[in-house]
Image 1 (cartoon, each protein chain N blue to C red):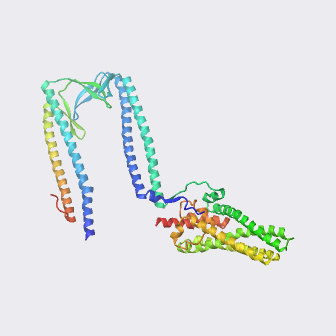
Image 2 (image 1 turned 30 degrees about the vertical axis):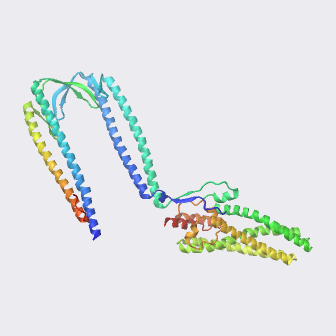
Image 3 (image 1 turned 90 degrees about the vertical axis):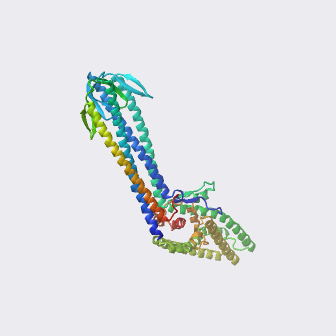
Length: 385
Length: 144
């Protein structure tokens, strides 16, 4: 619980500044343009080659062709082609071979194939470059948008904690499940403590020698009630703290939707609180049915104990949270609920309110998930400033 | 005041980079083209003079069909020669006529080259002047 912030949150803009990404994109685009011109050149060669193949195939049809024989670059003599089935083909490195028309066509075909394979490789390269360009563009766009990268090392943990830490990023489910499992863990611990206390009380009772016939039933009921009230007690306590924390946060930001949300949540929690009160009263009545006053008092104490324990839990959790609380400078010392913890590792990048609101509404309809996402918002905003 | 100077300097620099330097590059490229043309004609003149000297009447050559594929060609009569006079026109000349034309052509090409050289020099001078102006605006000490 006390371990430092898990994982790191880096804004993409700090890793890849948008201008740099755009520059990179520009450079790759230039390279792409080069490749494109190269491709055009090669395709020109291919066209020349096919034209030449046609010509070479046609030339031997006649014994000689009347042409203008070039004489230097700027002059021609009227003349004619002779020996129309004799070609001198450059093999490379200044070596020429005398070939017939057919053989020349074969050579030219092989040249054409080589050209085509070059074209293919060039096209593949261009495809890569295009992908690169789109990647750089996307990176630039994302950096401008303020995307953040969240990294968290995987650490082996107890299953209950892992659920909390690695809860799925959906805002509605993880809070609930995370909180639940957290509570289970807390409950186990406290249950044991409670049982100890009960044993003590039992001994006292036995020592006092009264209320022996009620004992068993009483305890069972008390157990159930305790676990219940503890559960809800945690909740109410947490939510009270939460409210204290959140309200100023909301004032600092302009998220009306979430305040609405919060209100509904408050109602919900008030209901919860009422239930709790009635339960406590019930419990109190039952306790009163037990003749010993000292029991009652001690119970109250244990209750108070638990309350402080759970609140200290809350504090623990808040320390495990990213330090954004302190940055917000709004009641940073106030503990938040366990559920906040569930969100530390799993906030999805986009910090837009637009995205948050529908999710929250969905969450609120299902449960009192509330305004968790607002916290990350503030956090990222802080980082961006 | 500083801002004004900065603006002016920037404008001058833009003028140099966007206008004068491309102009200079263009002029040099044009001059190179003319040089090439001049070389072609001087080669032609030398070749014709060679033919005259050896009194060649018929001629066997290899014609490039493209992609370094050659075929033999023969010229039965070398007395008449068709010379490129520009814009895709070729004129039929005798050797002496061709030589006369080539000398005139070479002269005009030399003139063109001179013109381009002058143009290049003036562009260079303009660049220098603008650079001097920038220097004065920034009140830097003169070079050398």
